[in-house]
Image (cartoon, rainbow over all chains, first blue to last red):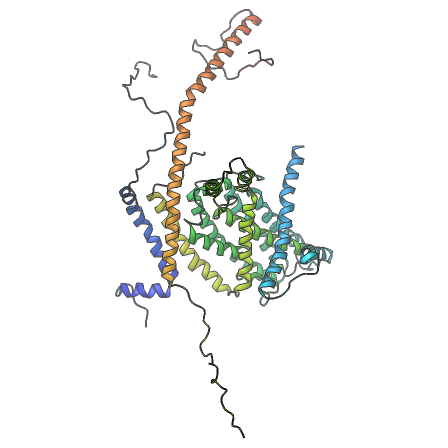
Length: 76
Length: 351
Length: 119
């Protein structure tokens, strides 16, 4: 069996590659799952009832009431 | 007074480390002997336990031979560099909760740096001996070490991804969630293979393949400087086993879930404030856990040495660059995506 | 003369098959099993990290609530020390001297603490 070409017979080539170059084939497979996981995981976990936690505050929260910004004290 | 205490602290670490090196050599010989249906050393001391000291004494008493054409300074410096740098790695290892010499915030980075510097000792020793056997051996060794270090450091990057910190203690404590053996299972196997290769052990011990190169880079080294190499080799084996158990098996954390055990025992009879609870709470993060895990890994090192045939040098290199490295890179791509997709990046606010 | 006959009960069977150890499962099962272990690990890790994050949030909020109290205590101490400093200066020099060319209050860079603490 000759080496199949990727462009003419892609399925056969993948089959051949999974047998003859398993490390590289499965590495590409596993690695390409990464971007897929990036797209599919957030909706999936939200569907399973996970709520995105709000960011942890690093300083005092801004007060809710109206803010009076003083004027007339700016540097000239 | 302070300096005296720090000297004693260092000695308290180095002396047991060297003692454990001595006993690992004898453990290796006995274990391999029993796997090959031999007796192994059994004359010196009870059960042959003092064989390592007898060997060391013999080597120290021997006459050392320095080759006439050798670069004497580098010839003696090489083994010293190797030994010193493989012992320096012990500095940042936390052996139990609160049992460490240095709680260095960049401990993992330090360990990587120190373990790469040991390569220079091998290179210097092989080159300065002015023998082609030693030179070829050192070239092979350094090529192997540098190639496999790539894999080790890439795997460590993924552990850092899950801990968010380079401090060894933080790495261990963040495994109270789950031992990283589980989420990083394939990477543990890759790391273990890499660490066998990194320590120049069988089946990757091409540097000192008896049938090909006489004794690798240490062909010309004899007597006490040979002891240095020998100690460095076994010290790095123990160190890398400790590193394996810190990164993946939870370091000094208890193997059995103690809280779970206590709650089960509490249903049968109350053990609160009893000696049993005291015992459990002492065991839960004692150095014994680390020792058990490391001992198991060292046993697997010896087992591997006794079981597998040595592979060829081109096979060694192609396994590293075309099998392990693509796999590691695949996980380097996959795992950050999963962690980010789960919104589970570790918090940087230290607790 | 008795002829050479086969033993009673026939010959024992000759082993012609090789004793090849079992190869285990198909490699794909190992691949899948390994990733199942990883999935379980990440499930545990996910919950652990979320818990860690909530603990961090708790710590930050406790800091935020505590800080005004600590700050007020420190300010009170500084004011007391400042007034004591002024009094000491007046006792030593007789007059109150301005060292800065402005009337604004300037927080002292160095604080003099007496060797004997009375209060």
